[in-house]
Image 1 (cartoon, rainbow, N blue to C red):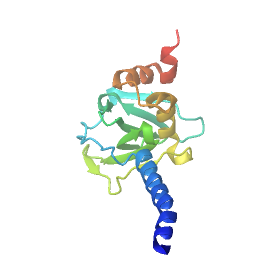
Image 2 (image 1 turned 180 degrees about the vertical axis):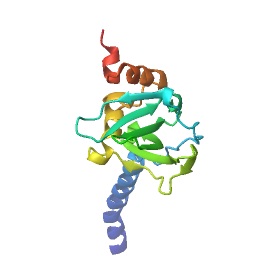
Image 3 (image 1 turned 30 degrees about the vertical axis):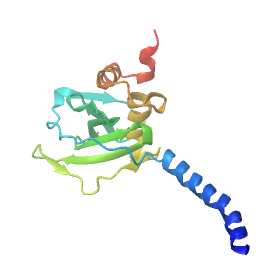
Image 4 (image 1 turned 120 degrees about the horizontal axis):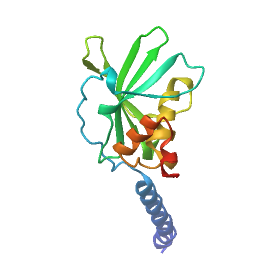
Length: 172
């Protein structure tokens, strides 16, 4: 009788534990899978699209127009070019995941115009710090309006060519 009473008291806790596990699994986006992507051709100067980050950065930033793509996985992939005031270039091939507010660096450009795969190419949170200001601007103004998946590569390219945020495109 005592064993039955103990079991009767434990049944609601077991059910509660199962509900908690289900909720966590339901909210988890672990089912999301990243699409395979190819490295784009090395960026050419005539395909650089400038975008403004802020007035104090020592770099001019560009996106290579021919590298911009929006995958079925919701990731916007692009080549990012950072040009210092002395003319040095830092080039990377990256992805931004709108739904997770994350970025990932896939490869870095070399001086011989080839790509070197990034050693640490895991998804990282996109923050507003100075080292990520260029990515934060791309995320909020060009790639992920209202923190949603981008409307498509052509819309992103139009906004970059116009030099204005993607959200303004809907305005007359």
